[in-house]
Amino acid sequence: MQNLNLTNLIFAAFVLVWIVRRQLAPKVIRFKGKVYVVIILVGLLTISDAFTKQHLTIQPGQAVLFGGASLLSAVVFGGLRAWSYRFWVNDDGLVMRQGNWLTLTFWIISITGHLLADRLWTGSSVTITLYLGLTLLIQRGGVWWLAHRAYPQALRANEVAQARHSAKNK
Image 1: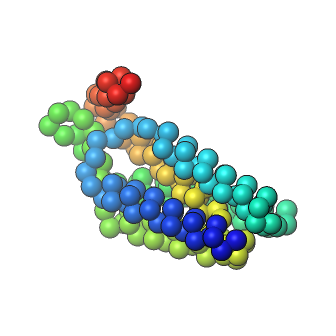
Image 2: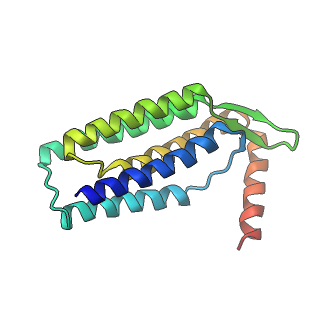
């Protein structure tokens, strides 16, 4: 279980540093959920591995309590981070976003809280990758929704640019 625990922490730290650095920089808003789905799948595989190979056992009551609390935390903090962003339209007519100190604070609180709960629940960090994938996907959806509410016309230009970029990379 120790190897799996260390692997989860290293992978989660890598993903978290990569994501937070990107969130604090000004970026054109895109809705690309594939990366988050991959992170979620890796998280599910890690949990499956913990049950099948590492002999992790969790009582049904624990699963409902901690699983529900973790899901609620992913939704709440994903939404709060999206809300903390600054949105604007750049000179090219594309909607931009940028996180700030509040975004970083919400990351610190959510990850610390999740790791503490994970330790209490499983005695490891087995669910951190799944948590990251879920909260990032929720945050991305929140960012898209907030940007659409603020700049519905300009966001269409983002959709066109994203479709053009996707077609060029195929």
